[in-house]
Image (cartoon, rainbow, N blue to C red; front, side, top):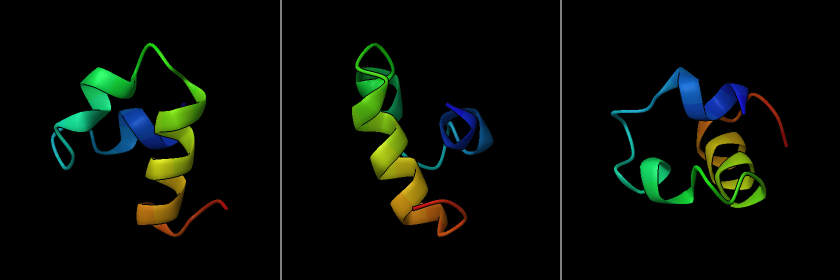
Length: 36
């Protein structure tokens, strides 16, 4: 969940997907471009 904490304000959905874990990881990683 590094991507989620990296830009919590960048995507408002992060807070909703936070409990999911995997959902946020894929979204954050995809948007960040750091981890795929």
